[in-house]
Amino acid sequence: MSRIFILIPFIFFSCAGASDKKTVQNDQPITRSEEIATVKDYSCTELLTALVRSSNALAFESFNKSEVQARITSRTSDKLTIELYTIAISDRTGSEREMENTVGWLEFFSPGNKLMDITHDPDNPKELKYDKSILEGHNLLELCNVVATPGRPAQQREWSDVMLEKDIRFNGKLGRYFTLTEFKNNFGKPDSVKWLKDEAPCFTIFDTEAPDDTYIYKDGSRFETSKDSVAVDEFWFKNGNFITYKGIRIDASTTMEEIQRLFPTAVKGRLGLDKEGTLWVIKLREDDTGISDGHIKLFFKNDKVYFMHWWFPC
Image (cartoon, rainbow, N blue to C red; front, side):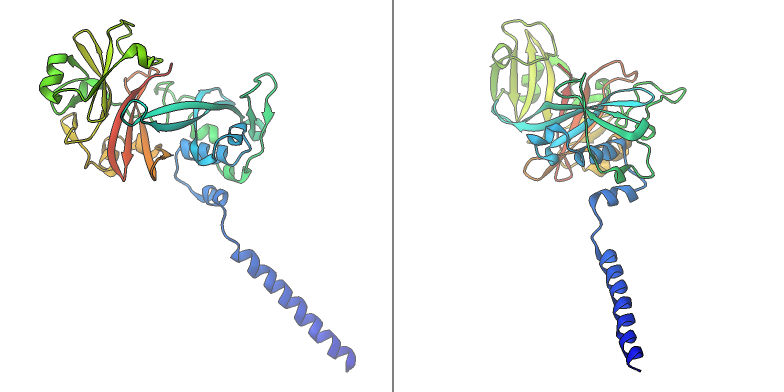
């Protein structure tokens, strides 16, 4: 009887231990990587950003992971080249505006799903560690359309929606280019004026480099001038200013849901950045063929349209 008495608590203890172990495993919180891996409908940008932010990329030695954005700059059948960059909102010119800063370069190879950091020395890249569970059940290169589908432009991207300037009217009247007289008639007197030569932008709209070219500012918006010509660079939806796009009014009360009806693919691939909470930005191609390297960025604050900017690489 004594032998039976000894075995019974041992068996009970063993079963209880197994039960406790199972309970602990089931109660463990789901990680962000596991959450991403279970999502079935997301964009190339969302998967790429999750992968990059789970890595030990050199950029994260200087920047918080939440600040760093990722985009694909070139593709082959088995490799993606990825630019890491930050987006900041600066008010050094007297009004808020976005500024981009490249902070790193990566390469992702589909054979072996290797992620390499080429920021400091492309000839001697550093192989990065990352959470490989993010890619479970997903093919990054296929999702990001590495190989162009027949009949589709080679430049097709996840933000492939187009916003043509010919379809835009500022305050319902002006196209992107107009005269100084038209500016005064529609916007009034500028809030401030700065010489382009003092601002030294890396890219100008008129590309004249004339000494008397200026930026003029009104209600946060920035316009470039050359002699009597004016062009919109940034447009802020403040003080009742608005645009019409193909006759549809877009103003400070327009929601992201309403914009999604116009640009569903771009909204799906939207990017987030921090500034007094979260601003969202969508990118729109500015031509039908994909020839232009530039695009239009449309920013949102509190789920409402905030400002737009014509962006072009230096």
